[in-house]
Length: 386
Ligand code: GLA
Image (cartoon, rainbow, N blue to C red; front, side, top):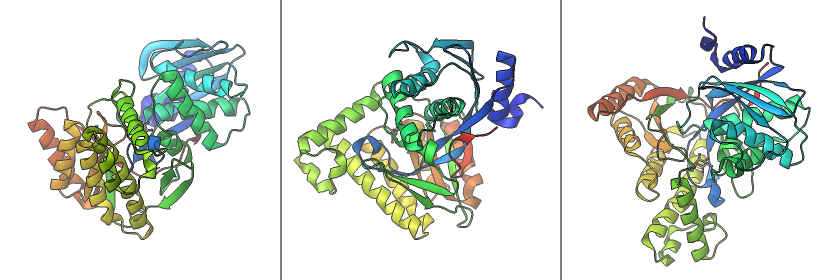
């Protein structure tokens, strides 16, 4: 058996031993997430409904005597990266190492006395697949660092610091959804997130009992949240809120109120957010009354809104959604920030094979690379593994 066959925990521990010549003090693992519904609502003080998944990032780690962060990753073959923690400044680290370095920077800026650390990383969560590999990496590193230094930080505060690393240090102006899902998810539940109050509510979802499955279709079109499209959507939402005289688009309950916006583009962007918040709350209502199949049309409506009003969908996602529904899915939508990444489909479990066939054929017909299929199960949040 090669080290990889045993998943990211074993791979990270193996890389640690290879790189540093000793065994790690521990291995920490953080999952990716799927957002069931509630897209581009988090930075509008709205509602989102994500859950942690099985695919994850593992970090094997140990303290060092010096004040260095030394990083190695099985997914980044360029060799180890060394970062000096004292004097760590915004803009001083680029590329993938900016995520772990940003976490150290955020922890230290908040007054937590974290020092030198050796880290070896492995993942079975593909980068750029829209499943929050960046938040998983941040949160695994954050947990490892505080545990190794015997510091207690509440999970919601840790999510805030991991987001700060991504916003300020990496330069991606994302919301709080991903880090919260990664750190606060519970197996068998989706997480209702009120992004204004920070309140989280676990909502039970029993896929097996209802005979349903949630498929993840990685379209293999890759995305970057630092390249301007995401920031542009955020700015449009802030402009719309300002013109409407509200603190955030969360404060608009009725899409009719958007007629006051003269700019058609801003009106469409805002309409996505206002209708999406409503779809989240309706989804929650159906889940609470165990009507899982009933949420299908809401998922598909969310996709249409992201495609037509918010314009963050991409051709492979639109094709996957359509093919999945044509082959029996109850609903399907892009998940995550958009511009590339993954689609989810809610489907009767016995239609999974037909959907794989239909989507694969459609991608082949269009000359696109074969998508990668998996099933998503609401899973446990980030934790120490060894
Ligand atoms: C990315 C961001 C999140 C959220 C989603 C869109 O995943 O990291 O904060 O804004 O996009 O819902």
